[in-house]
Length: 261
Image (cartoon, rainbow, N blue to C red):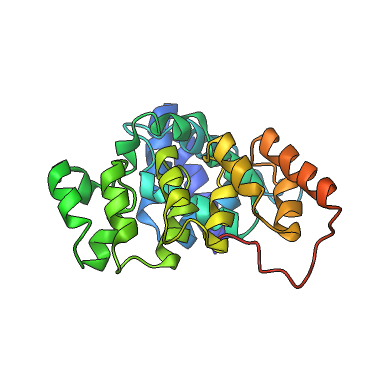
């Protein structure tokens, strides 16, 4: 939770800063300094605030929008923080915040897939990363799951230390290189598992052809949810609707939970 007084003090602070870039810098620092749930609470309180019920916070709202959509001050919001905020918003069904985080900058970041790598991994030479992907350091393996190199991903998917939960978590990440989702889907160990397929199909960064192919393997309840998911490409949603009509199915409470983690 974010204290109301804290919000008003931040609004006053932003009001006293004349330049928009400087206001974005302050907000970005706030989002990165807080624990992830508190950072999300700040985003929610700023951009979803019911202004008819409470005093408006226009400077905070504007700065939050700019940081989430365009970037913040001297640099963009940390990738890991952006991805974590998106995950929290997805868990809470907050499509408004999800759309802000799925901004042009987030998509553009995947034009350089290496941008997804944590700072602690990005400086490791590629050959070393490929070797490390076969090792047993669990913490390092989780960070390497963001690697855009296909050989690193292939080694990870074959590594016995990598579990289905790990793969589901990475398949649900936004943004993520399209090549990584394709490798997961083709994986002999994980590609056919239901939770993995759901995570791939429901990822807005999944290539349309791969998403449509995966949608066709899912059950009725998941198809209905995908058909109504405004974050997905319209072709994917239409394909899910067509699958529902073709099968003449209705949501079945007995089917597995369709929610990707």
